[in-house]
Image 1 (tube, rainbow, N blue to C red):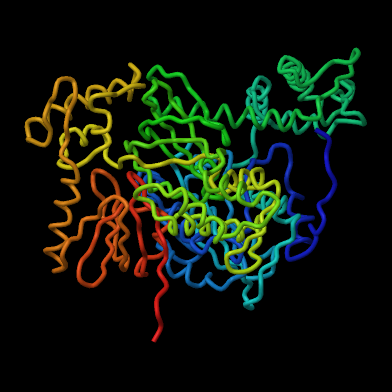
Image 2 (cartoon, helix red, strand yellow):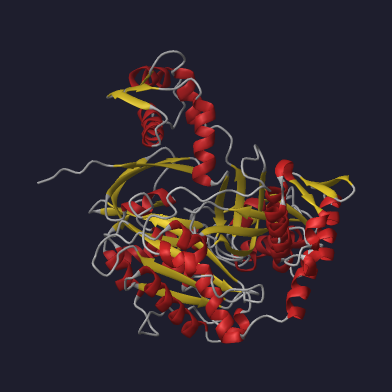
Length: 600
């Protein structure tokens, strides 16, 4: 818990001088404001990063009365986010802020407050700023999302001093809130601190203790008798006793306490876990469930369930989470990677969650073939031809491994020596484990059906419930597991009534591919193209024209000019819309390949 000095480079940029004086008017009675900040380097971030963030801050339910959030700017109450995004396109970076006044609900007019705050920021930085903001009222703490362009009013890169971002901006926000609402009363301060004594999270009392720590991480109780701490004396002693019960502090002798060096890290982790538990309990609406947090990198862990709730665990970086009501009777919390689009997982959808720390089969093959020698595609092809599996093209097998190697090359893990020759590190297994954990967040979530099971029960076409009919092992007796059992029976009855299945003892025989055929008839009528069904092991190619969402999942339409095929869609191809692609069906899976197109 020991403090640190000034960070390197904190004085560089605009606002350093202002940061020194911004807190001059603040007192212990001042209103508190929390500000979170992220500087996004647009040349290193995903091309869609800003667009995704702007979509998020205007999402449904963020407004004061449950309506979508509405973006505004310095002079307008209806900012054009698409135009703002276009103006930011060539900027080196942009800034994201979340401004959260402790008494935000009392401020009422957050929009005017934000405009006044930005005026003070412009005065501090000595430049006009271009920004957009959206107020969010969908949490206990109303707050404002701010996006500021990384250009000053002369068109140069906007560099803000680190100490202004760390303290100066927050001091200005606190100063303004205090002017609007007046200082906090002694009673308000004492009540706030009293609540902090027993909390299992990092608190302002802990920050005070951290400042008072001497050498060896020890604090003397007699220091609390000084005038600046006397009002908090009993609260600070109570907090030390609470830390002792948590195993984070010890009274080494009368009047001397030692606070463990990892206390801050532990308390922050406890606070995050407490927030997660509250989120899960709200999602379950008080229904009895065993609560389980899915830890990234859990090898072999897997479960299926229904998306009960979703949101962002990190609003600055757009990292989402899902609360999933599992078929096993447990409620699971799953944190996702920032690259995962929450819109892909509708509330009520059925998903399959698996720890992604397992080494891929392709990586195992590459490691085995590159044991003390480079990986060679011709060597791999010869082995694949000698061990050919019916329905699997050896050349496609090798091509899939080359695509994986290309991804690992871009990550700096392997090196391509020449065409068909790759240098692979000895510790490939450990490096790809870290790479996948960072890229996927240690978890892989597969959408099994975008339809809730209530609608699946009476859909014409293949559904997730069809996979359960005649089995249903692993379904619990609580929540989604119990509902899935009931829906499975309703589904079996419906399919029998419609002549889409027949009972043979305890088993159901289902008509296959009916839904895809029905969808293909509609597309054929619209386009004049002939539908070409795809058999297992068959390779089809064409231009990716669009995707079609069916009850059994999402399909991509490949158009070869004379006919079209509907094949299972994967997120990786969405960036290839309008391009020539090839797909090979492998049982329930599919492999995609980008086709080379001839120029004129």
